[in-house]
Length: 121
Image 1 (tube, rainbow, N blue to C red):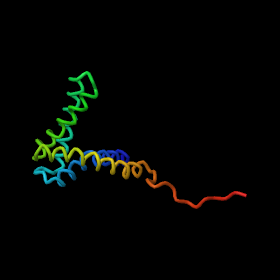
Image 2 (image 1 turned 90 degrees about the vertical axis):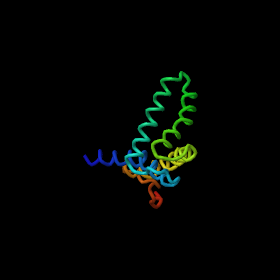
Image 3 (image 1 turned 120 degrees about the vertical axis):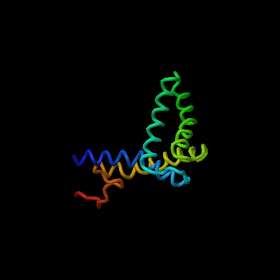
Image 4 (image 1 turned 60 degrees about the vertical axis):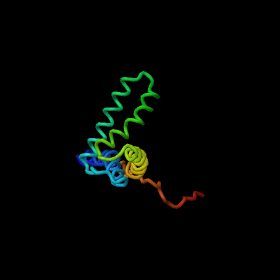
């Protein structure tokens, strides 16, 4: 049961918390957990719909990169340019959290083992 709680905390910290942090950085009006979760879910739905609408995955991703900030702007109460900044900051913050928290949750040291080299004779 503890591993499930750790997994859910990891997922929330990698997905929802970066949106909350990015929204606060750009001074959006709605920066709470609920709004960030709603923005994330709506952006995922829009991306999924675009993938079904366009046959070319590259074109779907390109349109999603243009529409995603509008979703963030609408839900978080800010401008499109700030929504674009939220999208960029979300990726940066999520990668940092993934690289630092992921190994810790999995029980792996993020910096590796720091032991003295052994010499065999």
